[in-house]
Structures are given as structure tokens and as C-alpha cells.
Length: 361
Image 1: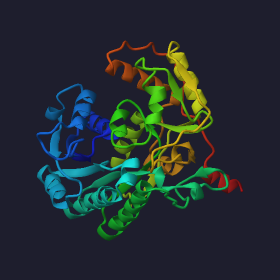
Image 2: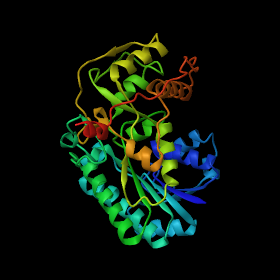
Image 3: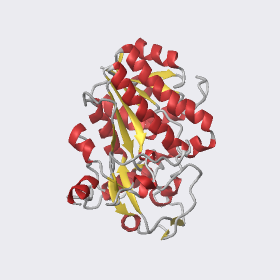
């Protein structure tokens, strides 16, 4: 079976890797960090090449194309006999806030193009990346948790565009029978985050904990020390997309996913144990984020519906994900790997669900 992946930035590279490992034929579609000219450097393909251990262009079919071009997208999917799509192409966070018109074309127009192409060609499945940014302060219920029944409250353009995509997915499922599932992603981290940062991800502050100390750059000041963070490790995120691809009768619904909700202070102390010689300081203060970037990653999310209905689960505790990220950053920089600590028995921290809290009230 052939699966098309639109956008192979941070998450997409891992999804492509896992699709190939499962025996699927993969077509990647997008600009890959360029402007659409084949003669230009394509940094996203270089990143994919590293993840795949080289020869990426021999392992996947590459289609340089504009996600806002419906006819081009449809022709590419038809030409390669695509049956399923993972849609990740997006202008994110501060990039969307800085250019609302482009964000509308890419994030809303590009998403509806994927749905329209799938409807025209009768594809078997579309899985796409929504975001917890469809929620805001008014989404938090009396238990302090956000779940899939919480009212939307997007603050910035990025979240508003994702919410529009969710509405469109429901309509395409109802009107055309297109099987669509959205995943509301929280704070994704892991090796390769430099790709997302280059797109205006607004989360480069986390590099002060996971990248700079790993490669010997310092001193580093880690902000947000008084907050929690939903550490959603990239391997779990990719597995979620793989699981959703096999989920039938999605009906256009979007599902919260999340990682290991932990204090930043615990993450800081764990990195100190991994890198005892690093010059690190934990600041309890917040820092200003780029326009369009929110503190949505610090909220608590209940993803029990995704587990119950789709079968999406979490595997990686914060410690395991951080160790893998730090080590991968070191190896990429040509530094020796650090010894693996005893992580046996580590599991993501359980958290109260909003649904349980409601039932108890």
C-alpha cells in the first residue's frame, strides 16, 4: 500500500521511517524547506536522509509540490496510487501569526485540499495533525483538565486554523464518506526539533535543556522552572499516527494526544544527572514567547478517548525520552554517547482525567 506524507519536518521524518519499517511504500509531498524549486537545497530531505541512515531518495518517492495546489496534489496522489495520507504540512505558531494570509492558504486551504483530493480519489484514510492550540483558558474545566469535550477557545491564528480544519474534517466525513482522523498534538519533543524551530515553532527555549548542554554549549539558563510541561516524545507521536492510519470509521473526529505531564524542575534535575559537567541554571521565571506561541503545553490534557476509541497509548516516560533526545543530539554533533541510566520500569505519569472528575462531581 502507498501512503503519502505531506510535510516531513520534525514529526514527518519519523512517520516516514516507521511507515517504511512496516513495509509501506511512501510518497512525500511538499517544498521540504525550500520554495518549490528543485534546484534549491531541500533541508527537510537532508534531515530525512539522516533519520533513514542515508539514501532517502532511493527509499521514498519525492514529489516537490505546493500543498495549496489542489490539482497538483490530486495528480500526485493519483499518479502514485496513494491509498492513505498523513497530512502534516503546516505553517506553525509564530510563522502563522506573522503572516495570516499565508497561514490561511497553507493551514486551512492546504488541509481542505487534502480532504478534497481524498474525496475525489476515494482514498481509504486521512490522518492529520491538529493541535491543542484549538483550546484556551476557557477550555479548562472545573477539574483543571482539558478533554475532547472541552469547548474550543483558540487564542492565535494557528489554533484558529486548526479548529477550522477540524470542522472541515467532520463535513467531509459526513458529506463524502471520507475516513478522516485528526490528532490534537501537545508539546512534541525529540531529536530533529531544529526542523520545527526553523519553521517558527516558538519552542526553541527547550533547546536550553535538551540541546545546548548535550553538545557542550553553555552556560544555559532553562526557563519556566515553576511550570509543568506535557513531554510528548516524538516516538510516541509517530506511533500515534501509525495507529490512527489503521483506525476505521474516523467520522472526521479529532482526538487529544499527550505525553508525560511533569514538572520542568524534574526534567532539569534529570538532565543534570545525565550531564553532570554541564553549566545549567533553572530559572523559575517565564520568558516572553514569540507572537503566536502560547503556554498551551503547560495545561493538563485527558487523552483517554484516543486510547479508548483509536487505541493510541503512551510508552515513553519523560526520562526515557530526554535520555534518547540528549544522546541523539550528541551523536549528531559528533560527540560520544553517554551511558544509559537505569530506566527500567519507567512509565508516563498517570494523571486524573477530566471525565473521571466530572463523574465524581
